[in-house]
Image (cartoon, rainbow, N blue to C red; front, side):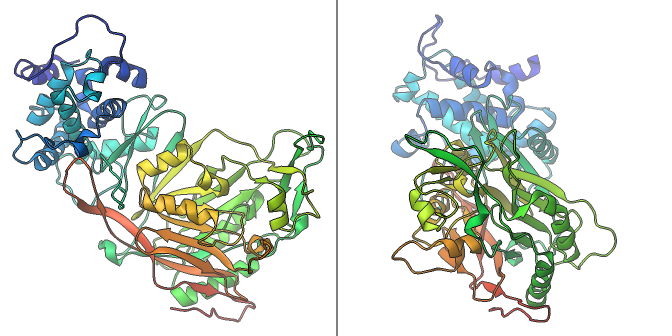
Length: 574
C-alpha cells in the first residue's frame, strides 16, 4: 500500500475512542478473519481507493455481526456528536467519489476517522459488536456503510444530475460492472457489489440506497443497452408493448413423452416430456398485427411472447420482421427439440435489442443492422403431477399416474440484468418466479424496475400462484411484475368447478395494484402502454429519502389487437 494513503488515515488512530486491542489470536470470528473468508483478501488501506470495496467490507461485517439492527433499535443513533449525521454522510460520499478519481489530497475526514476506528478492531471478536457492547465499533461500521453507499451513487444506474467531480470515477465503475458483473474490485467468485435500483416502498428496512452485496454462486451480467429517445423529462416517457400470447392454440398432442424416459414404474413412477407444438410462428399474421398496432399507437417499442413460443430456427426471421416495423426490443421464449441421444435441450428467454432505433422513431430504411442478443436460461424444470395433467386435459398424451418432468437441461444459475433507457429489467422463465432461492434474494437486493416473466401456464388470475409470487416482488423490493402466458394454454386450463378465463397476462406493482389482462374474443394480442415516473429511495439508517429512482406502471387501459384479416383494423380502447 502506498505510504501516502496510509499516512492519510494514520493521524486518526491515536485520537480514536477505541476499545482494548487483542494481540493474541482468538478462536471467535473477527473482522479480519470474517473478511478474509468472504473475500480472500486482508483488510488493508488500499480498499479505500475504491469505495465499492469498502462497501463490500463493512456491509459484510454488519451482516455477520447482525449490527444493522442498531440503526432502528437504539435511541443513541445517529450519534449525538454529529450535528447532522445524514448530511455529513452524503457530503462525505460525494467528496470520496471525487477523491477516488485521482487520489490526490486528503480523504474526507469522516471516512478517515471511521476507518481508523475499524482498523483498531480488526482482531476483536465480532461478538462484541453483535452484543452491542462496542458502541463505537458498530457506529463506525454503520457510518462507513452509509458513506460508501453514497459514493456508489451513479456507478451502475445513471441518476439525473451529478457534479463534474467524480465523473471519470463513475465511468470507471460502469465499465467495471459491464466487464465483471460487479462494481467492486474483489474477485467476483467470492462476492459482488451490484447497483441497487429500488428500495422497498412498504417500510421494510433497507440499509443502502445505491449498492448491494451478493455472495458467490450466481453469475451476474449487467447490460446497458443503447436507447435514444426524445426529451429528458422522465414523466413524459413511456413505452408501448405488444403482448402476443402465442401459440394461440395448444393441443394435447403438443405434449409428448420422451421415448425411453419412464422409470420406477412400480414405485413413484416418473418420466420426461417435451412441449413441441404443431403450430409454428405465423409471420404473416404477426405482420398484420404489427401494422394494426402501429396504426393505433403510432409505434410498437417492445414485443413480448411467452415461454417456448418460438423455435430457435425462427429467431432471425422474427427479428427481421420486427426490424421492418421499427420495434426496439423483443423478448420471447425459445424451445429446442429433444434429440434421440445426448443431453436434453435448453429452455430460455431470448432478448433482442435493436441498436439503431429510438423509441417512437420512424420505421428504418436500408439494410438491417445486427441486434444485440441476450439469453436468460430457465433454471427449474416444470413438473406435471396428476392434478395438472387433469387441469390441462393432457391425459390422452401423458399418463396421469406418472410424474412428468420437463425434458430440459438445467444450467448453472445466471442472471442477466438489462438497463435500457429508464428501465432496469430482469426476466424470468415460469417456474423460476416461484422459487425462493438465491436468485430471488438477488432480485430483491437489486430491486429492478420491472420483472418480466414468460410462462407456459393457465389463466393469469389474481388468485393463482403467479400473482402471489408477483406480489412478493411488488412489495419487496417494489418492482413492477408482468407475467405472460400462451392463450392456447389458458384455454386448456379448465379446473373442475371454475369458469373459463381469457386472462393471458397479469400486471402487479406496489402503486396501482394487480391487474388481470384478458385477450378479447377474436384478438391476437394486447397493446399495453407503460409510463415512467419518480420513485423514492429509502434507507433505514436515518438518511433522508430521495426521489431519484424510477417506477413504471400501465396507463389506465389495455388495448386488444385483433386483426383477423389483412384489411381489418385494431379495435382498440384508448
